[in-house]
Image (cartoon, rainbow, N blue to C red; front, side, top):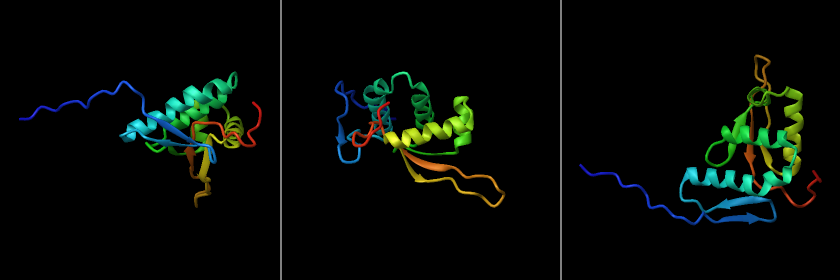
Length: 138
């Protein structure tokens, strides 16, 4: 029987390249989990200090990150996010609009009305860096 060997540890962090035209991050991490954590680390290092006292923006982004896949894509209703965060639905709608304006959340597909009258989930791409062009002042 062959013993499994752990992958060698690299003390240097993975390089993160920021595309200035769209505020996207290109990940050079070797695994799916590595790409996901590169997104998280970029958000914490670069964006969290800029948000300052607006902790609700960071809280909603972090809840969305918690439910995102390895590529930073999350499919969740605003009601589910509101329940996770402990805020009212209107507050979460306003926060997600602000995150879109900052370029931290890019909507792929907005929620849709299902035959039973309920609203389906929206799909978003999370981004870690505040878009610089036309970004509102916090």
